[in-house]
Length: 381
Image (cartoon, rainbow, N blue to C red):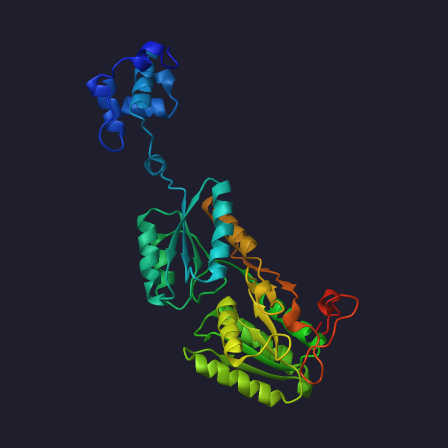
């Protein structure tokens, strides 16, 4: 049996029947050029040469190389009843959180021999059912949903296709599915404890409108509960952002006036909110760590570069993506498991925006070059 080309066959003119066709060669092109059936080519490509004579296998091998034929992974997978595709629907790809979760999901999927197909809703919740339908048309084997969670028909759409799904970050009423998220209550506890340790007693939590989004609701509830537990020692308020930038500036001014001589700090609900707070603070001519304290949910590449550096809550986004993918793969493998809720811990990244405050509202100096958050005292625990 021939296993390669001889020098003569490589340099001799290619017969017209075996010349590469225009565009990508198909299995039909290979069969026609080799003078065999498509089934014979398929047997060769699936390493079943024992069903072919040595001469036929050699002829098919030569033709495959001459036509530069590459089998379609999708076609081969679908023939076996598996696409090895995972559909990922995200609320907004412009959100750094979604991008980071996508990276983690992609890595885990690739390691298992799967590819991720992305559908971005652009924060248009009414497109969620269309996204699921479109991905199902591509024969994805299951879904990872990081969506707004407000489309009541999406759960039914997933159920209609009979494919497993895993929810990320946001819960969904009526859908019995694995759920992977940050431990929002635990993360907020770290934020509030950190600020109280630093002497910040006047707190403003700025968030996007809740609109039924579970993660936003949980963070607001935890912030209010933790603040209320301190009694009159803490004055805490919640502000929902709208599209009016002037309104945010006015809210910041009022909060600082309300605080009087006491230190005043802002907590931002996510990276999108952090950006808007940064813009408002710049327009006001204020400085983080001097005119106000600050902690924001979501670590970003630019957080260390703003003012004295922005203190953040770093979500384990890569791990969230990986765990969600592993949960889905277990379902695809047919494992009969109860529905799971997996909450992952956050990490506080302390920087100058939340260094200890004085009673006049300005930050105090640091001793021994050490940030107070490096020594956790469990103030609220």
